[in-house]
Amino acid sequence: MYRLALVLPALFLLAIPVLTQQQSPGTAAQKPSPYAAIPVEASKQQNPVKPSPESTARAKRWWSLDCEMCHGKNGDGKGETAKEMKLTMMDFTNPDTLKDRTDGDVFYIIKNGHNDMPAEGPRVKTEEAWDLVNYVRAFAKKKDADTKTQ
Ligand code: HEC
Image (tube, rainbow, N blue to C red; front, side, top):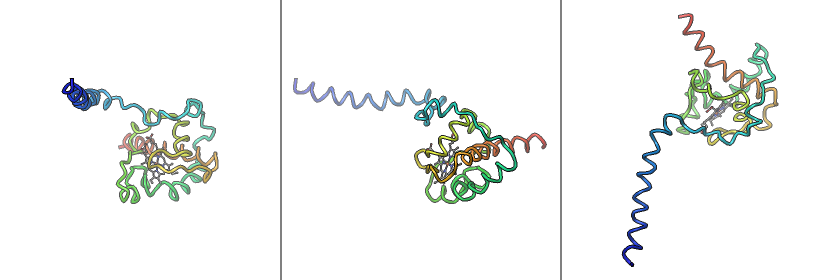
């Protein structure tokens, strides 16, 4: 009896790595969204700001002040601060990066931050955060247009 009490927990501990390993191939292919915490209403919110040269100009200012040091001037994720902090950055010039995100998701992430991504919070006005959504999306479009003309 005494022995069984020792063996059972040991077996259980052995089973944990096996179970987690078995799960990983599936989860790697269809990563569960790390932003599952985004409220549905926030995710569904429509972007009230149409992309325009004015919107781009407003966003560009904030981008160079608050985003560029991590996400890079062109959105490729190669900013100096990201390098220093050894952050794993995504590449916004790749159209796949944000394809599963709604404008509402991106807006929410900008306003509220996520993990190592700091929240803008009240620093930017609501309209300016939507400008940034347009700006972030444009990195992939620009590259898309570039490859099409090549
Ligand atoms: C300190 C570095 C840092 C700064 C500054 C920063 N970000 Fe981020 N950002 C990150 C990291 C790291 C992530 C990934 C967060 C995670 O773990 O999910 C991220 C994620 C994002 C995402 C979500 C991408 C996805 O997974 O769908 C968007 C959009 C984004 N950032 C936009 C911005 C904008 C716009 C700004 C400026 C207002 C900004 N970021 C400033 C580091 C930064």
